[in-house]
Amino acid sequence: MKTNYSSLDYQLTQKEEGFIKIFLSENGCGAQTPENLLADNFSCQCIEDLGDIFTGLSNNQIGGYLSSLQEKGVLMLEKRDGPKATNKNRWTFEPDLYSAEEGYLQSLSSNLDFYAEDTTYPNIRKDFF
Image (cartoon, rainbow, N blue to C red; front, top):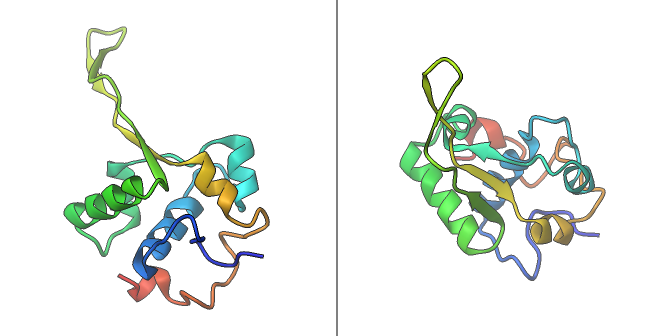
């Protein structure tokens, strides 16, 4: 059984593993396992939300993790098509979304619990970064 956030197919650094663990646990739908996320397909985040989650990182550092994980096939970027007009002649901007690649989620143990105590990263939210 795989117990970490990397596999032979996805060679992640320790900090990338920590980043993706937090990314996946902050999924907004209550999914606790990769299998839950595959069933719901709601593992997306926008850069603005990630700034609120990773308070110890600058936007440039967050962008670096996102870029690296995208290059390694862990995350994908869904580009949105710029501004949208609302029904009240107002313009809104839909942010680009980052989501976990299906293949990456399938590479993880299906019963890996994002919220279980992690002995590899015991203080990940406090001082990992």
